[in-house]
Image (tube, rainbow, N blue to C red; front, side):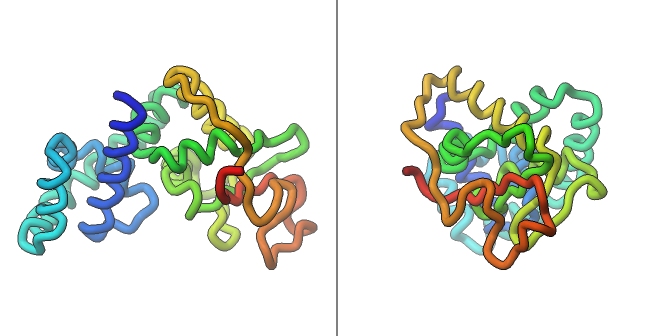
Length: 207
């Protein structure tokens, strides 16, 4: 799949999830595997817009996705346990990674050795946050406002894979991402003394 095809499908899955009332961060990762969604993704953009824009067609689609969502959530969890971490990310996370989030990851500074945890801004890294929710037990992650706080190794693994895929796709990001703060500065209102040794992924915009 080309980067353009992957971006188109990632955006479409997110639109399907929202239109059908699936608001969970993990929803796009799970729904991407449901046959009804996969079939819809293979249609043209006009068909996709017609289905999501028609209340009757959208309601029929939503009704058919409930069982598939539960089934594939269980599958994602089982595969998380059985599969190599990189294989799981390629199968579940990469297909719902938009070009915008992918580019943002490529421009995000790598956590340093003194960073024990990483705070990932959910709005800037939605697919990554969804993947983390499946792969990391609730006891090993926490919420700081819109940030998902996880061990450094988890975030570093995602970042490493993003760069590996970029090399495979011959992508060359032109510069770092710039946000309100650097990775060493916590979000507004958060005292850095309460969260020492944390790298904050704020997102932002390309430099």
